[in-house]
Length: 496
Ligand SMILES: Cc1ncc(COP(=O)(O)O)c(C=O)c1O
Image 1 (cartoon, rainbow, N blue to C red):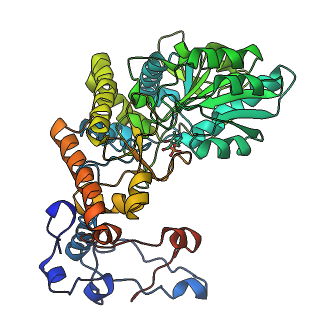
Image 2 (image 1 turned 180 degrees about the vertical axis):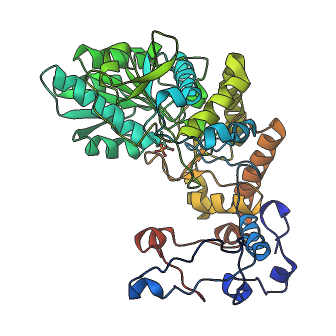
Image 3 (image 1 turned 135 degrees about the vertical axis):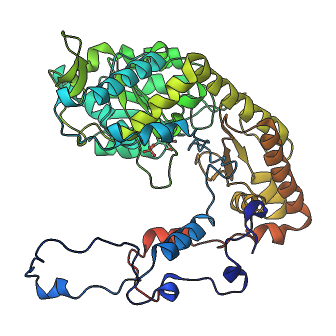
């Protein structure tokens, strides 16, 4: 069976219809490990009856085990295989220098509870990364504890709460645009605030007049990503920030889209007070896929006293140590979050340097604009504004004419060797296809992706049923996502 992109499926057995499943390759007594003979007295463990009966597990040799997982892995799509234009997620190729750094035993095997004098190298990594992140975002200090973007949002909002409480009035509401990522209103609720939504205008940007009307002494702050979730740079960002500051609100930057402005513009210069960065999107760790993330939160000087502690500091004797800020909101995670993701980010930043990071943003925007230009005409582009690193197209007209929906187009792309774009987000665009080619794809790949999407649009008119039935060439077709989310099967038994 061929897979997307024409890759051959792993094993000849698969072609013969005898794909080896775990229970078929299991044989009693086989094991994927071998231990030296016991040279200490065997302990007589007094186990309760229930734990004495081992669950039936497959018994495999190391060779069969590796073959099994390699076969499964080869059925999946990955950033190392091809273009993965999953808008908002920044699924770009991550240079292998990041793996090299994270595999260094001196860092990888370091126990996080070691005292400062025995972990100077790790502290230097944190201080160096903090300095670069603060330079890139225009902030003063940062915490590395949050393990993801959403965790960074919650941390930032708790810092906002602490700031207003210290001023004697915790306030009630956080304002967010109607195009916001779903984690924003969720974090607002978790932080004990009420989310107040403001509409986007017909250019896909925050409606400044509507924003000004919502401002009051009850507003703790505004959460915004810029470029916003439509991939558009907020033209009025300085006026937006000023309107929030006028009521002593704080402005939170959801840094999920930092990729677009790296080294070109800084949230701090736009008026933002708190910034989270998604190291697992912008800086060399893949987003999604179940891996650990890192969502450090950086703040302006006047908010540094509220950061979760401890934070790394330079001590008077020149060594590095720890400090708990005076009005710290307390810990938001164990130790310093996912340290190896921070290390990957530092390797990436140092390998690229300042000019290289700026080139990341320039190429991310160039690729997205080129792709948008190639698709315009076949797909609707709902907002007449040049995009940044991603854009939202709409399949609404294609659906009206042919019945083919955004989901069908996304599934068809899988047959043509590309990962699907994000679909049906942001919610304010009908039949949305949110496309982020990223800076790591060559012009040839961008053109091939455009050709594939144009081919699908043409086939929607001539053979709509074939597009609606896609994918035709992947190991599984269309899983029922809703059922999978609502009734997840979290157990496995031999023979399943
Ligand atoms: C705009 C935006 N905000 C927040 C997040 C949340 O980040 P995370 O998935 O790391 O929690 C994302 C994730 O894709 C995002 O795109």
